[in-house]
Length: 302
Image (cartoon, rainbow, N blue to C red; front, side, top):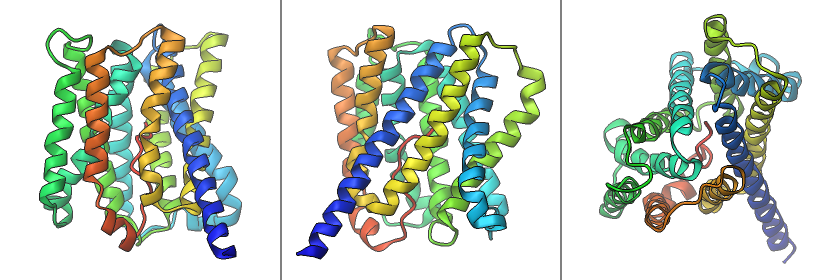
């Protein structure tokens, strides 16, 4: 009885931490969209990755030392980071042109794409049910971007590319899952992003106003602490248990988009969001999550 209560306590704590983490990611996207009204993308992405890098270095560096960067797969880890930066660039580009909820919803087809790619790239067996989820996910996207809808513009390509790149990032993450320390894997994403954007900063820098600087600091802090809470959530509960709560991020994004920008999805978009969420849940390989190494929930972390 006591053991059951202990497990339930850890599960509830993991769910709570996950809910806060995805709220931070949605809040980060909201601040980014606000800043992108009159500030370039490059320095915002630099702030996002550099702050995550700094937070991880301060929190985990003293405890892990060089173990934080010790890896058996340096090339793959760097490639993961580069792909993640590309995903972030595309998503921030989408935020400049599309409502927050719609951009987030389309990008959330990424878990479905992971299912589609896991066969040829990971040699995993994809069931008929999971292939059905892939088709369902694209139906959801088509419902959102339907002709006459609010997002039926060329900019809709950007969240789709975001989803494609983030799914490849997740595939690479699964290749090292169980073979690398999860903190090392997460740190390399932040490190690669910080290095790439810092090297490009002299070319893309624009001196921010005080308000823009505050937004940049907020974006970096929300991204960094969001990842930290995500790590803590997985320490308390399994990815299988946390997977359903990843999609709460869409609820946060919809609410924040309405409160801050006055954008609320129309009925068709809400239906498409529901279809994408259903497809993502259907695509989850529950048995593999129980038996295989945990690589963390597939929440978009741009």
